[in-house]
Image 1 (tube, rainbow over the protein chains, first blue to last red):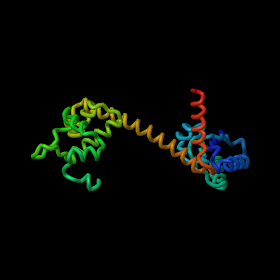
Image 2: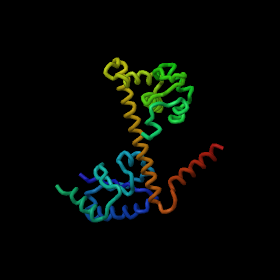
Image 3: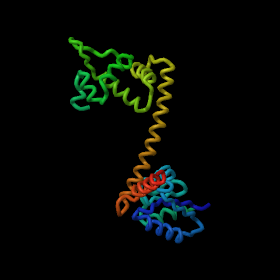
Amino acid sequence: MKVQLELFTANICSHCAEAKNIMMQVVEELGEDHFELIFVDVVESLDHAVEMGVLLTPALAVNGKLSWSPLPGRGRILQSLKKELEP
Amino acid sequence: MNDSESRAEYKIGEVTALLEISADTLRYYEKIGLLPPVHRSVSGIRCYLPKDISRLRFIQRAKTMNFSLDEISRLMKMREDPQRARLDVRQLTQAKLVEIERHLQDLTTLRNELTLLVNLCHSANDGCPILDDIQEKGGRLNNLKK
């Protein structure tokens, strides 16, 4: 089963474009087949974002659970997602 | 509680200023029994005690939840003597508690939505595009209405 990653971003958020790039790189590095990466615009999907507990952007939910808000550095994300793939 | 609220007695004018409530409303609450007969001075002037102020604050809070004066009156009985309150009063209190919990959840959601929006504004490099966007849309809607 794929690990679902929801990246909560907004057009006006200054770090969100960078966060999108980082997430795409991380997913590519760990294997795209293992992940379902979804980009959620918090302004467009405000109800969903708030329901998930997002108060800052960029934020990341892993398998429907908010893991980071805001997002940490690339290394920490990579390390954490590797653990998700462990049996 | 500050110094002005820790005093023993309050004249009606002081209560109106403290709680932002009219003198007519205060007298009305007393007339319909929502407030027990207020203590009078020798010269017959109403002297509100701290427990009256507490009751009035309770009434105000309940009114902000859109409780009727009749409901508030019954809740006051529960407040005064919970052990002896009748079953219907206890049931009403329980129902109102559920209503308040729901209201709190709505308020929490609204607070989180606004927090997220404010944080987005802070993270923007140039002003608050969200508010600008909302204002622009509002302007366009107003133009369409014309």
